[in-house]
Length: 331
Image (tube, rainbow, N blue to C red; front, side, top):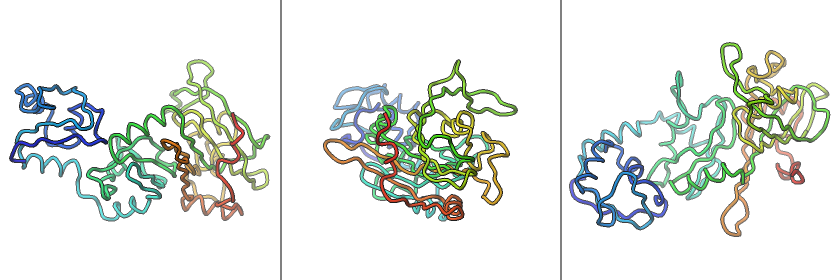
C-alpha cells in the first residue's frame, strides 16, 4: 500500500478492537509499529486519534498511512502458506454446509483441530483452503477431539464468530453424537449427571468422576439398537461441554466405554473384528437462527470405520426420522 487509505468498517468487522482489526487485515504490521503509528496520529478513526483498544463500529472510517508492500506480502505468505493440494481437496470435500456466515465440516477422525507439541498437520492450518468467495479464511469457534469425527462449525467473519461463540456458551444449540459402546445399558434412556475433574493418572492426564472438586457434567443418552448384549448403538446429547465428557461418562459412570477408546476403556474397548479407532461421531447439530427462521439442522454421515461397523452389525446408519427425536421430551 503506497498511499493513504480511508477504509470503512464492514458490518461483519464491527464491535472489535482496532488492534485486532489490523491483525486480521494487515498481518505484516507488527504491534510495535502499530503503536508508533497510533502515537504519532498517522492512524485515526473517524478523523480522531485512536488507541489500540479503541472499539470499532460498523461504518467507522479508519485512516491508514502508507505501509510497506514488501512487508505485507511477506507476512501474508507466512500467515497463509501454500497448502498441499491433497490436503486442500480433503478439507473442501469435508464441507457439508456453507452460507455467508458459516461453514459446517464433517471432520475426519485423526485430524487435530489445532496445533500443539508434536502436532504438525491440523485443521487450523488448512483453513486457507476454505475461503471460497470470502475475503478471509474462516475461523474456529469450537473443537472436537482429534479422534472424534463429525460436525464442526467455522465462522466466516468476525460477527458470525461472536454469535456462534455466544450460542455455544449459552448452550442454546443442540449437539448429538453417535457412539458404539461396549455392552448394553439397563435402561433404554436416561441421564448421566456426574461432575468431572482432570487428574494425573499414570503417565498422563484424564477426566475422572469426582464428587469433590469436579465441574458439573450432564449427558443424556438413548439406546438406538443393540447387537445382543455385546454392543450398543447410543445417541448421546451433552448438556454441558467438559473435556472428554462423553468418553468419561460412558466409561467411568455408565460402565459402557466407547469402542476404540483405550484411554478410558482400556483393553475392553477393543473387541475383536473392529478397527481399533474411536467409534464416536458428532452426528447432528441444531442451530437457532435469528427472527422467526426455522433452526438450521445439520447431519454428518459416519466415517468409513464406523460405517463398516454399522454394516457388520446390521445397523441402519440412516434411520428414518429426526436424530433428536429420542430427546424431545427430555427436560
